Image (cartoon, rainbow, N blue to C red; front, side, top):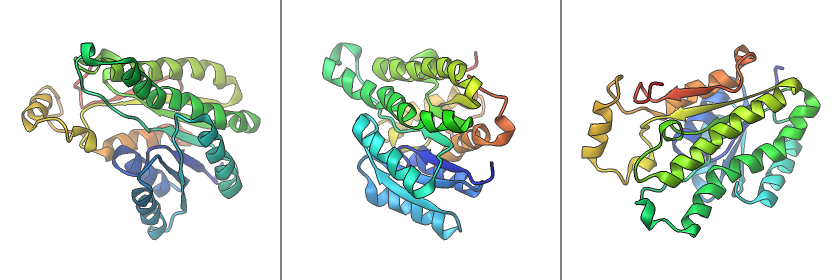
Length: 246
């Protein structure tokens, strides 16, 4: 398929922005999703268009099914068949488990896990009808091994991995691959609340010896979205610089 279209959720900044730009460089038309930062999302789309690509923006909270359905309808109207979805939108929490509440649980799970479900639920039927699709879910290395003081975040990202492997088995016969990327310590706004001392300690535990960049994750996503990855499904690419090796 030559006329590729991708939706990237949470693409106003950080990893999502890097993914949107990387896919555009590979020839994808891109729908840039954001929840709140509409100006930053437009800046991402403008950067793509300035480089000769095509992009549009849709503001939607992925935890809200009605908003996701509206985004799917808009994407189909503007671009036609959306063959690739990248579920990148997510939130993090750094807190003692004993300080967590039912409300904080719902906040994290509704975005990080339910959001992935909502987007797949909306966009997968067209992929099944076209017998082609790429679903790429952004998890985390903490979804693989868990992190102290990030129990809810770790659980949500582990859920994404379980959802990915199960859906890969179910959608494979329809020509759809479903994979995940598990980033490690990546230089994004999520690191803003972490001290330099902690970051230095994390780097020391990373065999590659540096903090990851959004482009490192985007490169892995680009591969999984490509035709060359057509026989890769149900996989989790551990993009942590060796911080987690299993």
